[in-house]
Image (tube, rainbow, N blue to C red):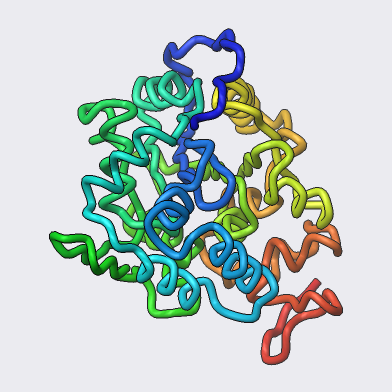
Length: 318
């Protein structure tokens, strides 16, 4: 049964921000505990029509311990399903609960021409159908879904992911964000660099979070716990109303930055790098600006976690 909805929240205005720099939002959907939805779409299907909750919990632990890759475990989970798509979708309609403030937040993004992208380790046909149902097809059509495709036969005997990337993740969210950056060329007409905002809940979101200027982590869940433990800068949130308020504040503070008044305290240090250069060759210039403990987080491809020193084969002047 769906959990009870939280008490209604008083939302900030969705009026035009009027700030200069372009914003781009990437959000998980429900890869673990829930971002836009409070439940994981795959878990609902696996528990009811596939491997079952006990086996799924074993498989989840195998991912967390590193015993098996996310892609390998996911193929077993999806391969365990034996249900027609429409019957599976009926279960999702019944069991999923959407964040009570997401619709208003999405309207805010559309009103301010902020591209909103769902980035997920799940299957695109399911995610599109779920969004169409819960927020309406017209509103859903403006959301780009960056996820895996799937082959599902008519009887539902075979559910086979078509992975976006040929690596152990199946869908490398960090790579997808960088692909988006390359396609968008990251620069607006007036030459300013867009601000990348990432919204997530689980540790699987961390690779994508590394690519963002601003990270939102749902309060009390795995991503926040990881951020606290590893001293990673983030904004906690309970609903999308919290995110909307913070984005308004951040956008206005960012506008002041162009006038020399400083960045908000929770910006990813990499934001400063993106303001001044678009290439990894700029690391030597800006590495000295980053606290020692954050070097691995900001430039994981350059620094080793164990020592904080440049990885073998890399030359970095600090």
